[in-house]
Image 1 (cartoon, helix red, strand yellow):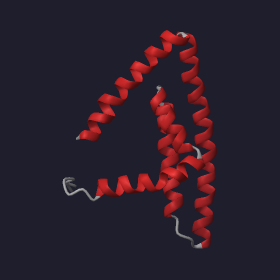
Image 2: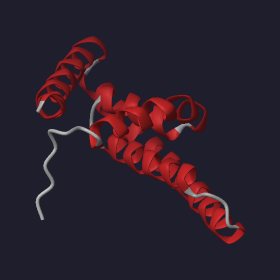
Image 3: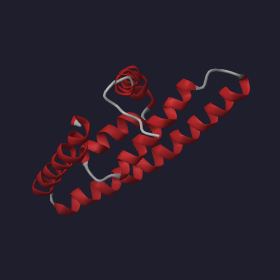
Length: 128
């Protein structure tokens, strides 16, 4: 429940506050152009990293290597690309961190730990 509150209330409120502050500080037009620029750069990076990850995944499958790490990279690239398409500076920052291979490598153990704890939570009920 606390993740839903954070995702649907706190992050959008923070995004709105930063967009208003940016509009007041640098102006409305530069703020809109900055949002569009990050969206275009994000789409380019997501496409480039996505194709790179797809090629690496195919090579791993063909050579019989474990694909878990590469598949997780693909999920990070997808999620990062989606965040960059969402207008706002906080989501853009998180999206860029997930798209850049160096920062993604650093964050990967933390993300795996968070996801592992989330899915091993006994309070989650899966209904069939």
